[in-house]
Image: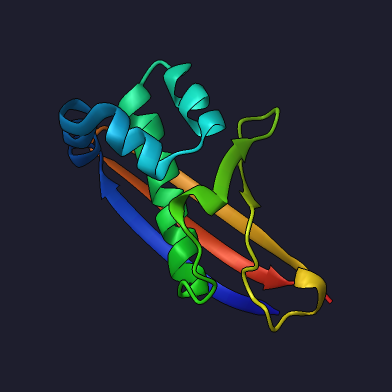
Length: 124
């Protein structure tokens, strides 16, 4: 059963501005240690931060932020094929037995934009 769907689009130029102007303050507020290392290892650092920011926004929209989730309570990791995976460190839905859910993510980017979609599925 689908519990939530969220979508977000980010202007990568806005992320570049925030990285240039607020650097560590911006990075440490919105990204985890592993996300920062991942983004800094990529050729296009700005687009990497923008995509992860977009994924987190989509997840927040999918849960309607009912859980009080913060930027640091979800982490976007990548499998061996580069597919983004969400690791959540908070109770997304207190009403779901044993928090049995799966988060499906799809993301894409162009030069100036990153877009992401998140679907939260209850697993019976």
